[in-house]
Amino acid sequence: MTWFLHRIGPRDAQKLRERVAAELTTTFAGQYTAEITLAEALSPPVIAAYNKRATGEKYLIAPNRG
Image 1 (cartoon, rainbow, N blue to C red):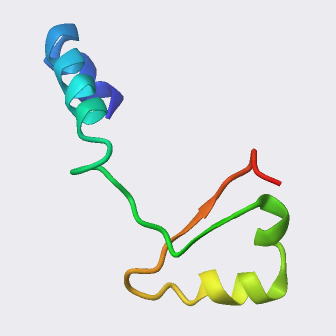
Image 2 (cartoon, rainbow, N blue to C red):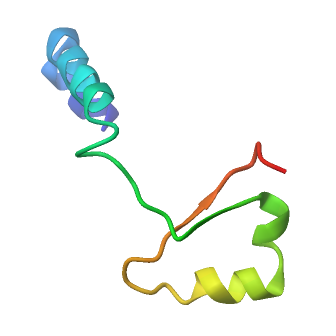
């Protein structure tokens, strides 16, 4: 992506950044099955849950939490 941003120039790159910032809660919003800490990510039951790789199930690892 860096090469693309460089290629389109600073003005257009800024427009893209502004679009993403404006649409963080709509177009670019993410939905997660669960938010887990790094310690929880190492727990066997949690590993089994996120290792399923089921459609529509995403886990967000929040390293600052916990």
